Length: 115
Image 1 (tube, helix red, strand yellow):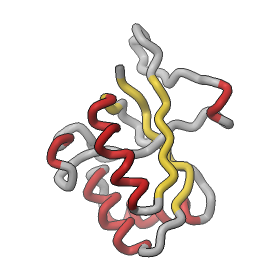
Image 2: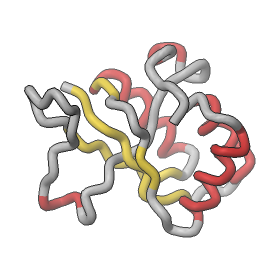
Image 3: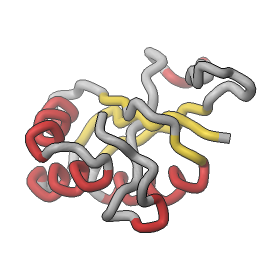
């Protein structure tokens, strides 16, 4: 099964490090990652657009949490050709969790593409 990753907020201690690692994990331009982390620090959630396997999210979620990100996994409905997140009552506004792989997390290299 796969999921979407949603990052609800960032409350870490080193915004520069969080921005650099987010850019590497999600394979985004540093400027884009900077804007995402800044928005997260201001309480605006961000969702990674691509589905993530459970195995990959098992690696990405604790890493992102260690950087100060509040990560949430949203399961994808099985058999849904459109890859829609499964809504459940514990999700609040239905936003998905953010997290991922790339060069920094070798085990999930190649999964994540630029948002």
